Image (cartoon, rainbow, N blue to C red; front, side):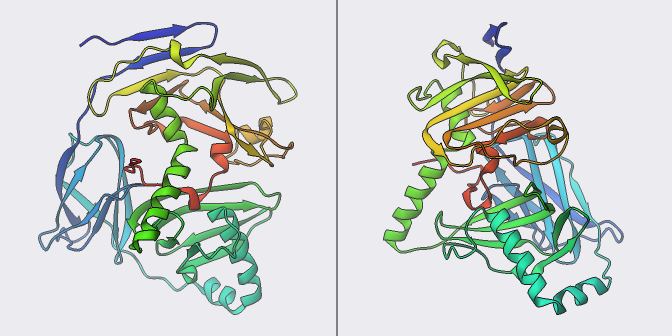
Length: 368
């Protein structure tokens, strides 16, 4: 197998096509960590996808994966703590997964909070707007079980947790989304961070609604980083829509010295369904979508903000939607479908980072 390399010394861009992987069916047993007894009815899913299953009476689950490299499996059961496992290669999978039983404790703070209904309503409204990215009055996207949310106010931010997965009905994209919230913080200055895994189930609709679902999904997909990277590595990037290159931060924390890259000059070789492409990044990979004008585009982050989990910064007026990606490992790995394979290394700012849960699509979504 011959790998193709392309080096751009002045721009810090290095593209490498790595060895391919293929999808496969994985099987394992789920058991209680304390008793070692098998556990039926455990919901197992590939994080951020529509691929999931449940363990049978023998505690065995079988999952057909469309991808096998750098994946996350999530195990959920009402009587056990949520288990999230990062797997580098699903072809090498343990034969048994153990779940920890939940210890039930009375949380007095919950009783106090629920009695303060007006305060809770204000916090729920703020959470919904920040989390969904939509007006709280939007009838098309809503949280159907807000009662599972608990809020608390710290010195400079509102934090939220959910003892059960949030269920989000998105009738704009045609999905019921289960969001397993791990962390959420909304700062008093408007900065936001959140973390969790999602599972998507298609909603049923009338023939007209199904057509609208497909239309809206395609629209959201075309604006996403997945669409950009997929088109990039498959040599299909529309250069009338996208301008790409690299930027750096000056001493005043402004993005400067943008050097554009001509996508047609990049050489790629597709090898298998899960060929991985490496982009070496020194500075900020900068992607400009010339078809989207953003009223509140984001400025370059400050030094303090770069070292935090914050993703929102001061607005500086209308301009084309611009996204900035920086990698702690100085590389971005993507597959042919545009999925970033090393997300824990990536810091994302600007337009793509501003998209919220209402704009999420499953990782296995493919436009028709």
